[in-house]
Length: 195
Image (cartoon, rainbow, N blue to C red):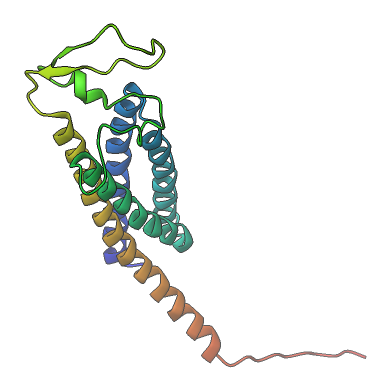
C-alpha cells in the first residue's frame, strides 16, 4: 500500500472522527429535547461510523462498504429533517413525528442563545413536556439551527462517501492484483516416494 492509499485512509479516518464529534453534539441536544426518533437514528449512525473507522484502520473493505451504504441512507434522513423543519409538502414541524408522540420539541426552540420563551401553565395534560407559546429574542431560529445541523451532517456524509469509495477502490484493486498473481503462477508439486 503506497502513500496514496495511506493519505486516502487518513482522509476517511479524519471524516469518521469529525462525524463522531458532530453526531455526539447533536445526540446531546436531541436528548435534552427528548427527540426520540433522531436519538435512535443518531445511535445507528454512531455504530456505522465505528464500522467505517474500523474498516479504514484495519483495511476491511466489507466494513467500509457497509459504512458507504449507510451514508447514503444518512443523507436521506438528513434531507428529510431539512424538509421537515422547512414544512415542505405535508410535513409539519409542529407535529409529533420526531418525538414519537411525547409532545417534546427541539431543545433549541426555547433554549437557543437569547431566547425568552413564554409558557401557558394551564395545559390540559400535565405529564406532557411544556411547549412555549411564544419565543422572542432568539439570535437564530431553532429551525435554522436544526437545518444547519442536518446540512453539516450531509456534507460530512458526502465526504465520507467520497473517502469510502476511494479507499475501497484501492483495496479492491490490490485484491485483484494479488489474486491474478496466484492464478498465473504455475503450480508445481514434487512428491518423493520412498520405498
